Length: 542
Image 1 (cartoon, rainbow, N blue to C red):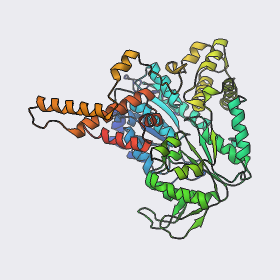
Image 2: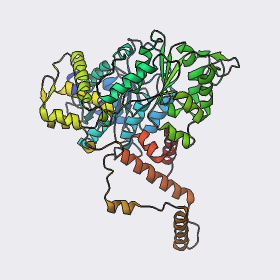
Image 3: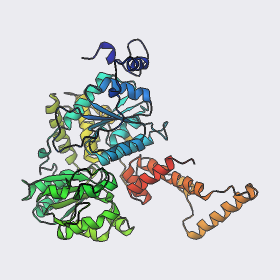
Image 4: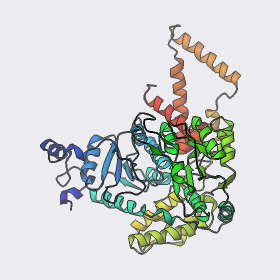
């Protein structure tokens, strides 16, 4: 049990709070060892069945080392803790290791923009793209209500303002991880909803379930694409056979091939043993490839070969093997556009999309939003052993009017928070509004919040669109630079291009509120390219 002083807010000064000096004095005296402060992910590979005796892995992302040390001190007994100071450090950690965090505590204000929430918003999107089941709690001093609401829209489970009480964080994290402990088998074919889009979806699933061909599932982030894929598997005659899922965005590009196809001993540095791949382990079951749009271009012909004749080779071997697994792929990208722009192979697209399924966003489901509310409200009330809340008339109408830009993931998280905060209470509109992003109410995804400029603003933002106009602009710019600096060669093309690139990436992130997938789509590049460009810019002075 925690001592009394350990329940005080650990960012609050005063006698009742644990001082940072106490933390470091305990380190110096040997009471706390460096083992309390791991800084890299463990090397132990994850397995399909988690060890109940292994503490869950918790990721802490904050650029203040004192805050990180204090969080580790309070939470190390219940979690294996890893930490990072920036989004790029998180990307490096996740790319190197196989065991992934079950939960994350993140700050919004991260380098290189520590006084703005942009990096934190982008990190939420990144984490959920890689790890759809991770439970994210935003622990931030940027406790503006709009930031809190938008973090939840992006998929954060909750927002806790600094200072926070350690016991509150511990209870919250345990509760969120308990919610995530629903066995995969529970995700059966019982999709919720009676609206026309849901009836069409169910009909397609029944039609396609027993066909041997690939299925491509398209839909927005958080709309439930993996649940639909799982439903196809359970409806099919392969239901008793293996079901394997791989998120193509969750692993480093160099590891995708050995993960899918396996590798021989010594095939590459670190390949100390023979390893079977997902295609081999899936047997005659189903292999679900999420975020297929992130599959490296040079690997796409090898996946195409498996889809065409079932043949593949382990990395480092010449012997051909045969897979009989059925492939279901999913994406939130427009793959037809990716094909037109050369970022995805046309032949692979056509092989994957023999059957195509579109998962409708929540905003198109009408009264199904109330059915989803009833389902999750009952589920979490039973799990938390509380009486479920109800919605007053105005709150109920607000629920029906809200577009849920984060789709089912956002809706589910809202119900979790309402169940926790307001058990057995009739919630009125004011309480519900606290959990919603008011800026997006009534707006479509095609019109991001804050992206409704006036005509004057549009004119002011206009730029030359023809090559002739760009040529004239460049000539004027160079002539001005030469005149201003007396021909001393002060103009720098690389710097100018970086400034334009930084400005457009920043503008796209602002319009999409840090949603990296939507940012990449708006800029017409794939997410990997966007990652690389942002990394380059973050290391380069303007």
